[in-house]
Image (cartoon, rainbow, N blue to C red; front, side, top):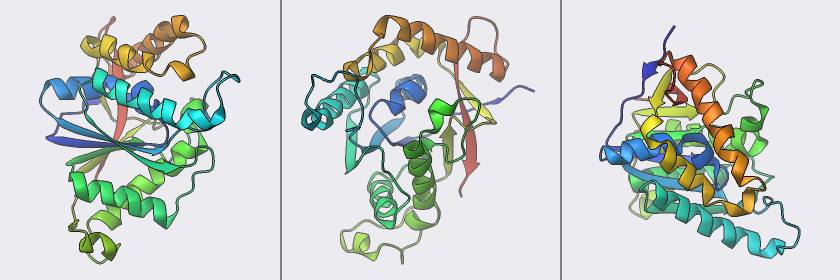
Length: 240
């Protein structure tokens, strides 16, 4: 059974655990939507301070390196707004503080759609189910419903002028049983350019392009597209 096309909306807030998650996961879709006029902002929960592969880079420098890489990657697909919440990489939990901070981003940006990581473990692609990913996805869903829409939740945000906001839907990346797809054949090069900005995370940049193309070709097959097409897959949750 073919999947449904995930139609663009006017505004999207992307919430991910680490710098580079959005680019490996959905940068092709973001590039396609930006070309159609969708407003997009990124909310990156951690600075990726446990990432990298080069032991010669001082660990104290990793957070700023990864912030700069993510900002450059965002520009490669036409995104200017990138916010970092500053949580620690590798120890993320679904705390009220995390829910509060994502809620603040939702109320500030007022997106129609939130795009986040799946809180459901994908045993067929265990790499997509890093514990930080699961926590970031669950916290984002909690922030969408009920936190962001409830004016009596996180009342300090009201004092800052951040009024309640209802998100129309949530698109989950790396969900085990996707329902929707975006054809990213025409934005594949932009996705690769975005990923290439994360030099601190790419011990084998030459092999990365073929690896990512393989993922997207498999996604296109799942979506029921013709041979030669590429697709990113999502599970869509209606939240309004």
